Image 1 (spheres, rainbow, N blue to C red):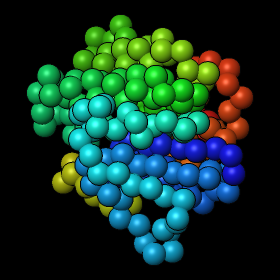
Image 2: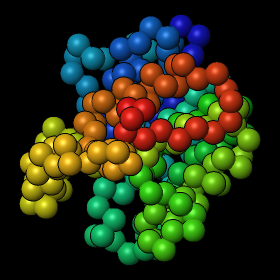
Image 3: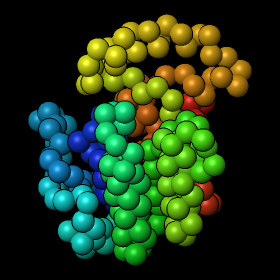
Image 4: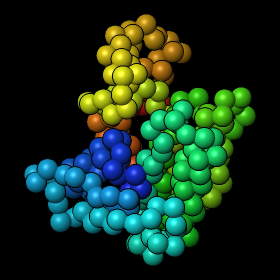
Length: 220
């Protein structure tokens, strides 16, 4: 128990599973969450190792001092429905807030950074969403962490519908199409939110600090 983790975005579907995986492992002595609301955990999931802070995630000065002493950072903060907001607002939340968190982590000597990104992320992409994700990845790589883990899932399958009719259809149909995604298309297969969150933590635990690595479906 000599690793300490801080999580931004713990109230989201993936972030909640990251926290649960951290608390399930004896490796992590302290798990800190930063968010706009606390994570609701069942009594059997609660732990004295968990410290939750409710604060303004848009303002690094409200949380930077809380980052000191952590070895690892996990960021799952992001927009659930990008199509429902302007590009400027999406960029502010998905890029600016996340990069500010990464920069604050680096200033406070956090050594390892794990980011939830997206399949197809590329700084030169013609698609705004994927270009933003790619530019964010490049910006975080450039900070100088001992290691950066970039997780690029395709369809994240949640146990419940969070965003209405369209997501309900996708959650039903996508698993049925997985068998068609073979060869180089396997990276587009769906992954359960539980498997994704657990994978982010397990790969961090095995990390040996060798620069940046990209993880896709095969790695999950």
